[in-house]
Image 1 (tube, helix red, strand yellow):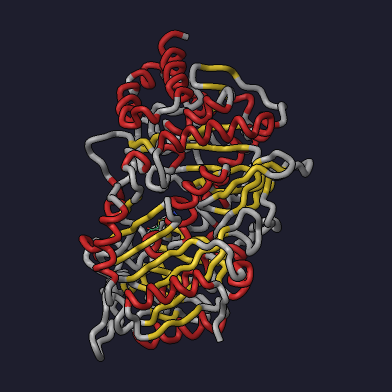
Image 2 (image 1 turned 135 degrees about the vertical axis):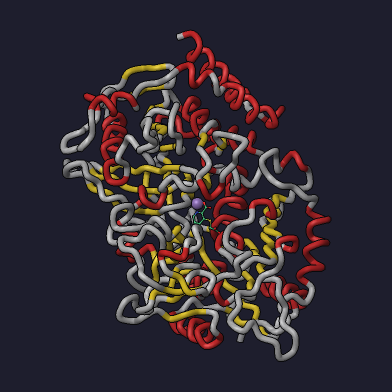
Length: 598
Ligand code: O2Y
Ligand code: MN
């Protein structure tokens, strides 16, 4: 008996089966039995390693192919009929041409493998903000990760009914097996020139080929929840953003909901589940990566986290930087490209202790003296959000939480002060659009000191970036007096010895407190050419071990430094051409004028 009567879905699955020619087809039910069965099979085949049950219960380690360790932006495409609709920030190929190329690659690509059909919901099943996707994949690693990152199984098919809308997501590792051939415990993938992460926003369709890793393969995440959803959100009048969501509760019990966008390597997951140092304020986590936001019946902007797990960067995560993540990954987690320790646990660089010996992410013996990293810098944990000790009890509320505050930011060792506030919505949109970060060691771009990453959406806006900004302006108009306040932060200022000036982590709660008090009209600020800014007296520094002069220093603005970046800003905006909204042009002019003349 079929698991669904949805004719369009059944026809699509048949069509893909005929093209990819798998040995068998399995419809995933999302149950624990299914998860355990697939994990057992992968342990048997040598693809997965079961970790020591006493150290890390029900947890597994995978090692990817060394060529398949991260998202491949150069091989990621937005295929729209007209190139202008993908815009200057996306790779573009004509959809007919791309489908032809990929169809040839997909032909017979699942031979010798099982084709899994994964019905999944992004967002609580049945929420008015949620969307249903169906991922077809030949990777059991993808299935078990999707179990954690999304809601999988029959309830999703029930919501879909016989004619509900779904987003088809096709994925193959791109390595068919010959008769009697097996992977032999090796991670299957295709060479880089055959990898394609393709999005067809005009058809709400995703085709991914050749990579089994993270954002390239777990298609609910970056492909659906950001690239396709951002295009869909614009058409339908909502927002799909690369933002964490947290709730901050004041000592009086007043709740504030914050959505914050930072480029990678700026501590998004750390902020999402921070332990605040500011007295009697409480943080609860709702999401660490993606926010879907719709205007609710009361006119407020309601946000849900469409995911149900965290796919976090492991290296650098420890009890100082992110104690709640460390607690979350204690069990029921999947680790990819970490060190296997001699006692059957996992380890990564900058964990709270130094492992003496282990097997590195490439499967070789490793000690701290080996002169190389044990874990890959983009090693990951996949872990259920429900296990986070400070997950909010409302994190799965289908109605979402009302957003009071947006935060943008970036990593800058100089120029950008600790915090500033937009004078109004349009100014805030400009702040987000011009956000910039210094490349980290992992992505060193020697030619440029800063990389613009508007709203942290540079690799994720699934349509023309100028139209994306216009959508932001229009959402502000619709929200009217219910607009969230917009702020910009830079936790990463350094002194003359390259030491961080601001202590960061839990101490960031002091800045969040000031923001909440601004929302409440209780905190002061001074107007500057950059926007509203606090003075030291406006920030709660009780118990903060920091020189007041140093804090004063990072709350000042250096107008000349901003003026010297005008050229970079113009260079970034110029390719947007006719699609650059008038309101953005206005903001750029006003910003320049304030910096030069006020
Ligand atoms: O490297 C990957 O495939 C993962 S990328 C990722 C994962 C979780 C959250 N954010 C990101 C990102 O690139 O923004
Ligand atoms: Mn992200």
